Amino acid sequence: MAERLVFHVDVNSAFLSWEAVRRVKNGEPDLREIPSCIGGDPEKRTGIVVAKSIPAKRFGVTTGEPMAMALRKCPKLVCVPPDFKLYDKCSKAFKRICKEYTPVMESYSIDEVFLDMSGMEYIYPDPLATAHEIKDRIRDELGFTVNVGIGRNKVCAKMASDFEKPDRVHTLFPDEIPAKMWELPVRELFTCGRASADKLTRAGIRTIGELARADEIQLRRLLGDKLGSHLHRYANGIDEEPVQEIREDAKGYSAETTVEENLEDLESMNRMLLAQADIVAARMRSEGARCRCISVQFRTTQFKNKSHQRKLADSTDVTEQIYEVAKQLIAESWTGEPLRLIGLALTDIDRDDFEQMSFLVDERKERLKRLDTAIDSIRGKYGNSSIRRAGTMDAEKRIARRYQAEAENKRNRYKGE
Ligand SMILES: [Mg+2]
Image (cartoon, rainbow, N blue to C red; front, side):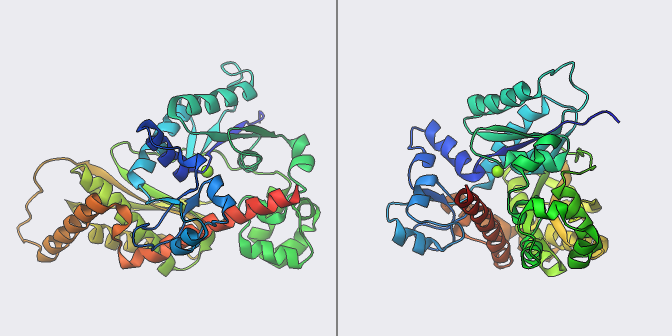
């Protein structure tokens, strides 16, 4: 097989940068240059910090802490509620540029893609120059920065993009693995969760290099057969997984979340699906659309992708109804493996002005529609975080925890240097 070449493109502090770009366009101060954060409701002093600027970090503001505490540390902190519609727009814009460079792009999350650049040396003879071009175009055309990682497979590209930030290109080719990756702590290895990192550290395996040289049989005993072998391969920079195009239906609405702590039970998956249903259904309603098909997709810790969908008799834009179907879909298709990623997509979109009348008027559906309308109008007036469904709180905490873990990783890395 010919040598593969994979790029991983990752937006630097995505939510904060995207909001900053919008404000700069309106002549407002650049959030990246002042103490600022995304999250919560600054007026009511509720909610948590989801992302923060570097100047906010200097005041000791940390991701995941309550807004009230952050404001005590830094009374001038500019707090901005999350805006998923904006994030979606920015996400699509940078992915559109990335897609110009390859026929095979894998959307890994809202702010990350893998590009399969294999076999394109005739068009792009110099991978580094191409990576710089992608990075510079996104910065110059869209106003926010990305890191690009280059490797022979996904794990190396992903690890490389996480080296020094922002606005940088890094390579991690096989001969660079010992010098660039092996000195990092095990928890920084892509897909190594906190629980695995703790187990490894307790067993005396602290760095990725120690993990790479560890006995595979011992690792399998420690972490289980699949995960033990998987992390051993990753530590050695081995990864055969192809870059997979996950079809993005331009006419549909979707959300997906990569979690830091694996999802291991239906209850936490359902909470995540409710948070996603809430966001995508609101987006769909704001464009006067309804869907006829609902699908749930997920990725296991072993990188198996699966999706399951259902066609509806009548199109819908009701959050509760979409969530009910999503819940059934995950219950039917999940076979017990821990999940790394879960997503919800609404497709087969209707944009007619009238809904197909069914012979029986569904009273519950009418009531739920009125509830959605009320929620949307409150959001329209007071912002996305002004109201939330009780079940999504946990998903928000999970997102905050993920950011906290990322922040912790970064802090430790700088400490180590
Ligand atoms: Mg990012």
